[in-house]
Image (cartoon, rainbow, N blue to C red; front, top):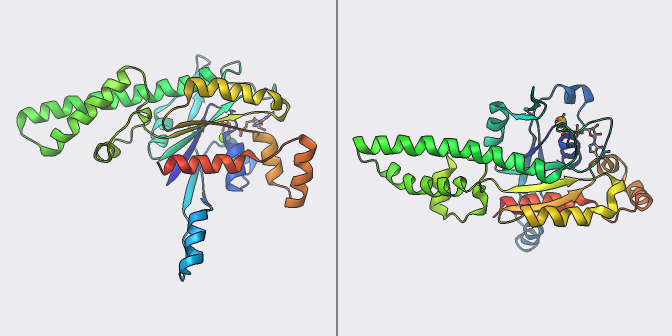
Length: 277
Ligand SMILES: Nc1nc2c(ncn2[C@@H]2O[C@H](COP(=O)(O)OP(=O)(O)OP(=O)(O)O)[C@@H](O)[C@H]2O)c(=O)[nH]1
Ligand SMILES: [Mg+2]
């Protein structure tokens, strides 16, 4: 299972990646913009319970591989370019965490000039939908041509599923919000569609925005959450600093900044829950 961390440049992806995977990437390596991978063990209460009852010789915890996906570049026109390199990096991920920047930081300007969460989320959605639509349309045409020449059982089964996808994509909706049967999902798996992947939208706040979080989460949830899409919040910078401290100091630190609980546990749990759907 692989979860890709995606988002616009300077949204806080690498910060989040390092915090959840408890890794430290050298700033020089970060600047090189390579994709980073790390495997995290998922605590599972049910598994622990089973171990208690059955006392097996060995237990295997579920693991998730997190990937800090690179490849998004600021284009010549100024706005972000969704390169084919980026889109193909995302294809292999089973689910996505989209980091959306809410924090203001003058030293690292937002690539699109201003902080606007809904605009950023929509731009991802549109790119994914367009990429899927182009793939689905090409495949439909190919299957139709093929079926004129000979009857192919697989192609015959695939066609209605692809047409169902096209209908949804034509209305500019991501595929993950639609109900697909197990068989349909199985057929679609080979296409590695982007908008079908479960998505956790992670709003990255600065700790100075504490009082505004609820308002923003509500606003974004109303417009963007749905089946296979959840909205959560976290404090990128401060949680990374916290993750580098020994446990007893974390408590003092949290009190000092008025943080009640780390958002990261919730974030990992929600990401894992999306994967298990
Ligand atoms: N003030 C503030 N700064 C943050 C926060 N999160 C990240 N930053 C800063 O924003 C900059 C970019 O963070 P990264 O985590 O490297 O962002 P990224 O999305 O990986 O960026 P690219 O890989 O270059 O696309 C860094 O200088 C961070 O310190 C935050 O919550 N608050
Ligand atoms: Mg990065």
